Length: 64
Image 1 (cartoon, rainbow, N blue to C red):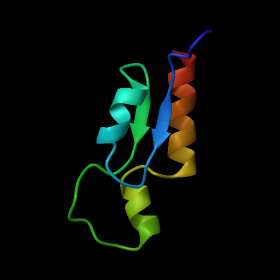
Image 2: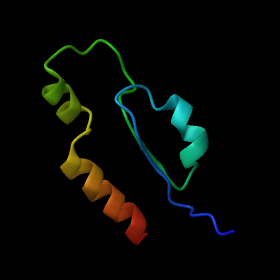
Image 3: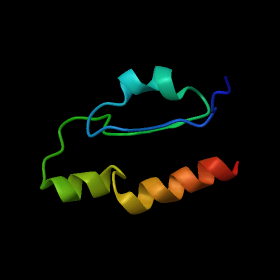
Image 4: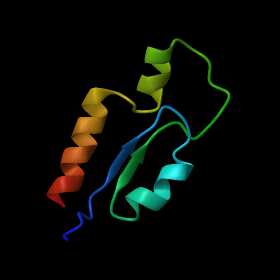
């Protein structure tokens, strides 16, 4: 069975629990700091949890 080296997680909270799954070759999108307060769309944009950012960084990862 072949396993992909590229793994991506998307979590609207801490990415700590996902790091063991994505490994060194993957990328974990999430919010790893506390204390920010704003409407969710603004917070997601601040932390890069937007479709455009996730798509862009994921494509770059695949091209490596």
